[in-house]
Image (cartoon, rainbow, N blue to C red; front, side):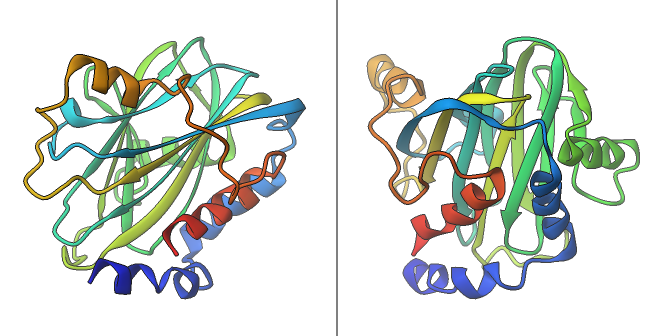
Length: 232
């Protein structure tokens, strides 16, 4: 049962592997990603598309330098092979990504042409080096559209659920946007949504309220760790 699998989140968090700990430490040590003033908090809960292509990517918002911080929490459910998330960068700058989650997850960042530009797989060569830069806040990205691709590492069973939370920021921030991505209904391909419904789901500015489980003003590390309370 999915609920039974998700009940193990707390024990999972206590045994994060080295790469995830490195991501958390990178956020702890960062002095540039600071809240500015009274941070405004927005959140939405959406159902992921049943599509397993970038066309079904869940919109997590607009990444604006020194303005917004984007957060997403979700699960690769049993037999789910991939999750896609899309976001827009408004200007060139150094982007930071924080990540916590189950062991055995692979995260890739792709540009609008679908080319992988950062990859958490240690065997990915220059793309892995770029991923380490991304964790440290030293990866420069251009203005444009990007996609996050979340899959299991090779050798991981498709039957095992994988919980994760990710965070994107460029410099400081005064607005926090949280997306909780739930599983699609069985047999749902995402094609039945009307234009108006899809616009509502995609529009982070049409926020549905604050996420009490992740209070405003927390550091990136605290916020990501707090994301797991959403699954309990």
